[in-house]
Length: 188
Image (cartoon, rainbow, N blue to C red; front, side, top):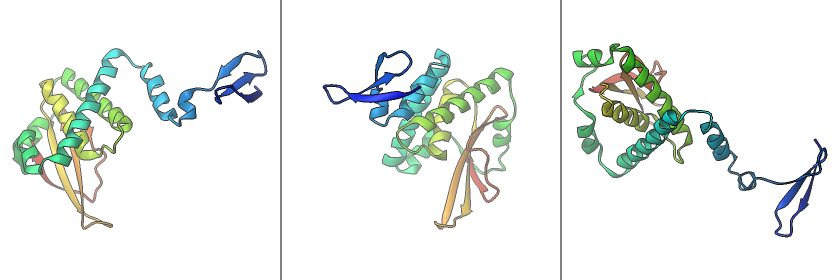
């Protein structure tokens, strides 16, 4: 389809379609360079209301986790995350083991929502805020989880850290974990 652009009196371009001659104003979203938001909204229409609600909830918890990490010292945050135990603690294996089919399905849905929410928030939601958000969402629904922390000798920094979450036999966030990371502690 051949298109010819001619400006409106307001300065906004019009697009004339060659085949039908109808006038179509360009989308304001494209003019402002917000096409990724437009794609997000368009794709949100393709999922059901329940999943949309999960994405919104995940985005809210990601924002709160990010703010907590910026504003509060980690020992204060750690008290809210659960019991801090070594990786060999039997509670870690117990929590990460498969449970009911319903809990596993819920863990998969929350994993999906946190991943999608992290891709669309206006800040970089890395592994720790994702694990924190997913852990809170699972806890609210009565599903136990284990948040793992690992460290590795970094290339640019002295130390690289990573966080990942398991629940009901499901790898919820932070996977795949690189082989360079040694697990140092967990929250159960």
